[in-house]
Every structure is written in structure tokens, then in C-alpha cells.
Image (cartoon, rainbow, N blue to C red; front, top):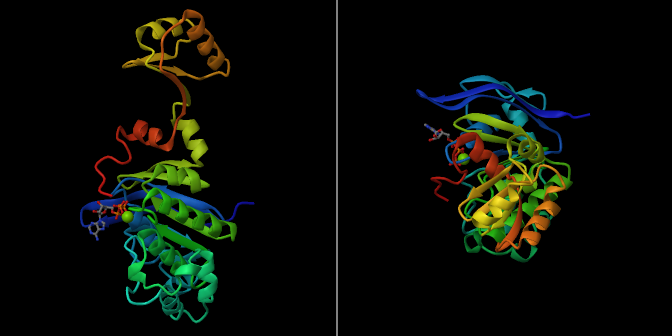
Length: 307
Ligand SMILES: Nc1ncnc2c1ncn2[C@@H]1O[C@H](COP(=O)(O)OP(=O)(O)OP(=O)(O)O)[C@@H](O)[C@H]1O
Ligand SMILES: [Mg+2]
């Protein structure tokens, strides 16, 4: 049975007249990675900071591990771990010293060495924090968020600004936490990250959730399915392919065929070969969360972003 560890109902947050979170409802299940995916200013940080008891809500209900956020702040804070979006540690303490420092804030905390192993920083344990790369700093941040051995961990944009390799290394750490049975709430504006890591995703825009579900469910529901791109096929390939499917479109010099039944692929190849139509290459493309965002909002996820 699915157990909900966080329940959010009709949550609203206003800053003056501006509504940053506009009535969202969701549940997070024990042991899952739940991501909030959205562009800058969507309301992701505001949402997680309310659940973390760092910001007050304007209205709505939030409970975490069965406790109301307004009434049980101290007990909640013992059970959660937080990597804030603007995380920083002490420059002139080493990795190990930083982890020990933050551990000292809790009566019960995990040994620093265990946490160093968890985030794979053994060979950097005695390095000053200031000398670490961005990706390694974020891994120290994840270790610090784990010092009190929390059940639930919030990671607010843990990979923003990292290069692809460092980003993937942070993903491995997140997967490791999930394997340990932790519940993870992740915010991100990288759709690939949400797709790779999440059991369920909420796509947030303008303070609202515009889609929620597993990446596959969302893509099946809002995406355009799989398409076959006939690159460089031009008018002649288009004319030939129109005869086998009504779901054929021209996009510049490319021809796009919707793969709505499995026979479409061999049929396209056969028609192209038998008619001797010119094309550069065939490319199969599945809808992504990025396509879903574009079709729901008319904008790209990364549009206007400053990374
Ligand atoms: N303290 C504040 N006072 C006024 N407005 C705020 C405050 N904090 C956030 N906002 C506004 O609320 C909106 C949501 O901000 P929030 O930080 O939650 O977005 P976000 O999705 O985390 O964005 P990012 O991807 O840039 O971190 C933004 O328009 C932001 O400018
Ligand atoms: Mg944010």
C-alpha cells in the first residue's frame, strides 16, 4: 500500500499582492523521488520552504509525517533534511569538518565518515570546502542534509549550474539515497533530470501544477507520442509518405510521421526505398517532458532562464 508522508492541500502563498503559489494539491509517497519541475519563478522554492517550515503559508493545509506544519515545527525538523537552493558551507573548514559542524547541531547524528562514503568524497575529506568544484560542493551539501539521518530529504535544484558530468554524479548520489529508502523531494528546471530520477513529477508554472504523475504517464497523456523524422526528405518523400498515413507533416525539409501503430516504421522504410526518395537520415523521437511543457504552456522550459 502507498503511504503518504507529505500531504498538501489548497496551498497558497502570497507576497503582498503577488501570488507565488496558487492553490496546489499533492501527496508524496514514502520512498519515492518526487520532483517539482518548472522554470525560474514557478514557485518551487516557495513550495518546498513552506513544507520545510522555513516560510509561512498564506492558506491551505500541509502535513508531513502526519504532523501539521504549523504545530509541530520542532518535531518535523528532526525528521527532515534540506539542501537549500543557495547552499554554502564554511570555506575554511574541510569537507569532514563541515559535516561534523552541522552534525553537532543535532543531538543524534550520523558519523561524518559514513556520510562522506555516502556521497563518495573519501579522497576529498581533508580538502577545504573553498577548493572543491561546484559538483563536489553540492555533494557536501547532500551529506550535510543527511546528518540527522532524516526520513525525508529536500534537494532544491541540486544540479543547477553544474556541468553534465558533475550533474550525473549528483544523480548517482540521489539514486543512492533512494536505495536507502529515503523519500526525496527534488526541484529542478532540467527536464532530463526529472525524467531520469523521478517516480513522479509535478510540472509547475506560475504557481500552479499543470501536470502531475509519473514521467511516462505525463508524456503518454500530454505528449505527441513517438514520431519518425525523415531528415532532408523534402517534398518528394512527403508526397510518397502521405499515401501510407494521414499523420504526416512537413517541417521545412524534414518530414515527420507520427508512429501511431507499429507497422508504420517498416512501411515508411519500404516506401522510401521502393520510390528511391532522397533523405539524409531517419530519426525516431519520443516525446519528452520538454515537449509536454511546450504543448501545455506554449513556451520552452529553459526560455528566458539565467543558469
Ligand atoms: N520573499 C519574497 N518576496 C516577494 N516575492 C518573492 C519572494 N520570494 C519569492 N518571490 C517571488 O515568488 C515567485 C516564486 O519564487 P520561487 O523562488 O518560489 O520560484 P522558483 O520556482 O524556486 O524559481 P527558481 O527556479 O528561480 O529558483 C517569483 O516570482 C519570486 O520573484
Ligand atoms: Mg527556486
